Length: 183
Image (cartoon, rainbow, N blue to C red; front, side, top):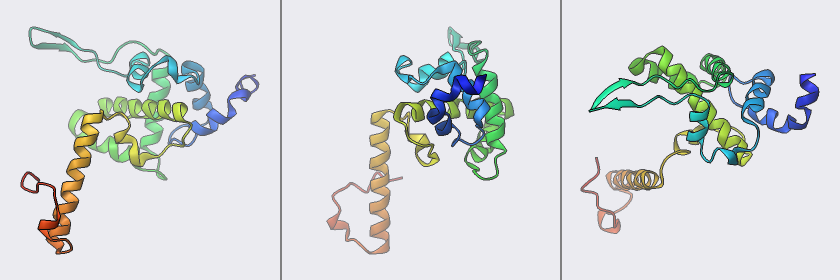
């Protein structure tokens, strides 16, 4: 019965199955919860908030009282946590496994799984918005603000220019970027 109801959404289901940890059943569950129209959320951050994967901000007089995740997403959140566990253990594509190890060293295993689940939901949002297949190479730049993206670009250009000068390929007078503030 579920396969008959999900038949009109086969292209979106196949698109989501490219993400590590997502199989057909979990893709159907995620799509049944969030739908295929991402314009209703506005941004991936709003989708993550709606799905219950954002930390709360309970602060008063400079004291942080609670940063637990919200109670929303009763059906979506457990499915995304299961997907995150599967993605972390995926041997073919270690992208989320590496991210998990980096985060769990600093924040702990449970917070790392929630962070991976949020990354996966952000990837799902952008995949359904653009129709592109999952590509881990540019996931860190997807939600980057424009001014931060421009700053990162300038830093990369300065680094490349410094490397070219160090290798003797380019003369320092030929470069018009200030190399003094490179770190």
